[in-house]
Image (cartoon, rainbow over all chains, first blue to last red; front, top):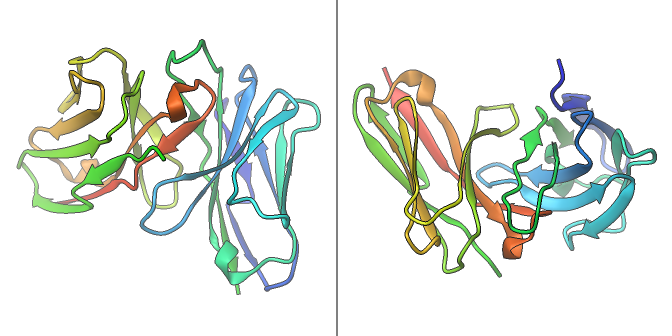
Length: 117
Length: 112
């Protein structure tokens, strides 16, 4: 399968614990995105990488959240000291990223559903 | 703040009926995308529209980009239970090619 893959698919954790999610993008895609989706909402942008550089972080991403893409391939999203409000689906997407205003088409993984109890 | 407003929020109709869902904004977009998302899965890209007034067809789904590139519609003919899902519209934030924003989606349920 050459699509975007995310691991784990589901994670249940106790409040206060740290969790880490992994995303493997489509291999030739240089852009990688993290989104969060809660029930009844569309995906909300969290952050994105161009190769290994993290170019933007949303204000939704508190200091407890950190994302890395060390070699410009896979990425990890870590949440420290989880809170119940962190419960959501965390989606990873990748894209080729073409020219200015040319239309960016993102390909999503299946997501990691986090439940904080 | 750019917003993509989708309507209706929920739609439940009988198999075989036709339906239209909408995506509206006060902003002009260089392109707009439609995704479908099934429960527990990530969104899957259906189509990208780029030109004002453009119409694209995908089997029983017809997508239209408004002339002013501020809105779009998705029309489904003879809906089937397999069409059930969350339909999301998305567009480049401030017409950048590196950030996509989404509407809240229309949750569609087709009754057999």
